[in-house]
Length: 386
Image (cartoon, rainbow, N blue to C red; front, side, top):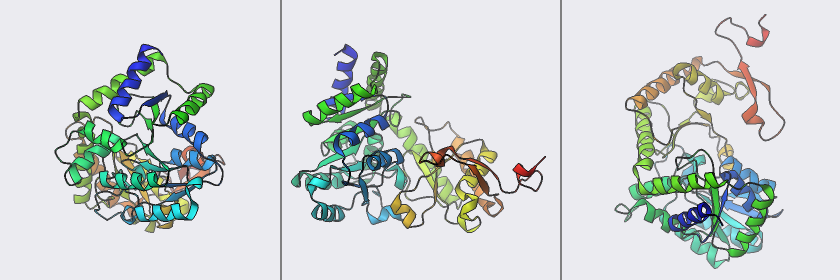
């Protein structure tokens, strides 16, 4: 093993606590390899609302996703501090129903993007792991935003307020058996990730899969990844700047009367757009129409939110304003908040969009082409202009 690999493996082991580490090209590669190694058709994966790529890999391998977040996670106005938590009673019921042979692992996403960037508490991951261990089921913790999750634990959980982030991350990971991670979410790096485990048999299987797929990292990329992880763990302010900026934007929007998903998350602010859907029918793409109007106002790109099955059943509608790792320069948060508030104030005048085309696959919702239903420039659909 080259020196760069040794240093990277040593750093991940020291910071996350896993003895077996495989560098990969990106986080979704780690998700795919894990699903290929452990998921079989007919299996059930309990989870706390997963990121779209994570969901896709489990389903593509033949699993059914059992979404069991705490009830508060599906209530946008609830101020419950740990909306990333799993419902332990529901997990126990799933294990009784399906048995450990049909559950390859429990999948836990830290700082859960789907619910608004909300954290999992230390107490909850401990309870989940104890229950899973008694039933000989592995726990997978998504490592994308573990530092952000640890920041919220320190701010919100009893008896955790005086602890260092590295110690909180290490303890959190001690309640997991596998950790796939995308490094670009928490660290100053554009690509790369890893999958780490305590299971030597799983590690050897993952080695084969990474080797055959060609999804490893170059020597230079490994060195950059090791340096980025060490830098962020050593200097906590890298994490705090984005968390603080997200909280500032969230407070400013709430004060301006914009419906935000509560409480504040750490990497983004989520807007609750259910009221907008009263003005625009679903076929006029209200969420995307709002983001287009916001872009016209501010020059800033927001993102649509891919709902999970549980969120669809509850009728939730959200968009996401993600923040860069370093937060924003002084004064920028206030300007963004004013721009969002202006667009929200004229929401009844927002033009809808019409879907022109989209590939007939799961990526289609990201690759679709749209046009305004009625153009401000000429009063007719753009597609009808000479």
